[in-house]
Image 1 (cartoon, rainbow, N blue to C red):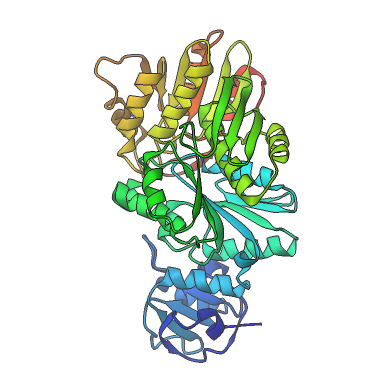
Image 2 (tube, one colour):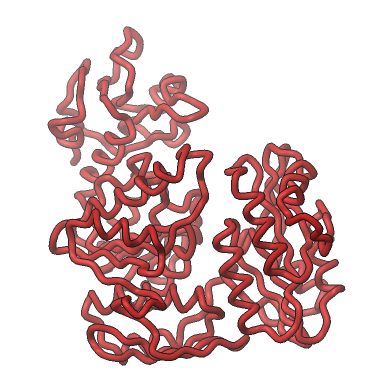
Length: 486
């Protein structure tokens, strides 16, 4: 039995009305999901205020309401608690409701502009998947063969802590999760006890949300500020922002990268269209790497995961075996077709990710690089001209198309991209229909070429202003090419 006063703790309440020591059946922030006896936390969002839906929550049987608003005259049948920070209260209450499950798990948080999803999947595999290690991220929540899709890279606190409690019940020991800058800013992970945090990379993105690069970095940094002196930070030593992060740490740390100064670095490496090989120098000796993952950026992801594993005490031979058996993550430099030419689908949707992708395949490809990409609507517009500059400087031909236009006009988005091309660049075509753009790139490809389809990766939908439609880059390639490796 959980009681409201115990869930609130000593620091959450400003004012209240009604009985605080009353049993609570669950924590809900969506009025449509309230069940009899639940506590409804009325979050003030960017578009809607949960206060507007209190009547629905009470009608569904809410026993208590937690809100930024003071107790009103209405709804005398429920206990009403006013708090200073609604999102902070939601996290604290959800954690306590589920018995603070993160404190009984080894939790690794992975943050960075790019590389989070693959790094999480690698760490899960290296820590021992199955019933030992769970994962949360862009691809959903995964444990013991059970998979649940999520709408957010880092879900809201009630989903996070409920999942952790289930992992513990299933005998799980570890959790590795993507931690987005939005989740950090919105207090979703305030009450998670992290034992490791991984910094993959940092570059321009989400400026529409954070307002500046400085605010964006401070959000990422806040994850590492949660670590105690006995915990570990895993830091990309090649990223200039990583050096600044290290200066702010109060915990132990290890760096990875190609730099000779990195703690974990390749002594030798080889990239091809079949995968990569490397020998890593580490503080605990050499680690042999053989992987189906493609490109230089994926060796960075591997080094991040190896760092986390070595810190945990996993033996080098076990790491090598797990890497050799690791299956590439769908939509992360995934081969959609392999024949005379190769087709690769990737989630790259920032200028840094796009540059890493193009430079990596320039390094291993034999022919032309044909790029298909767009930019998401109703998202950070500042990266569109940067992505255009990267595309025209590193690809041989570019198809500019739609990503998820959302509330924007696809033609207007494409025009902003084209305006960012270098003066005189003409090796491009605009095609708002993403399917037609992909088909055009496939028709253009010749033996030895690589077609890179960027931006949507694993997504199987496309979001327009008035509708969301099924759409999968892999399916378009399969339909056109009649099969292939996906």
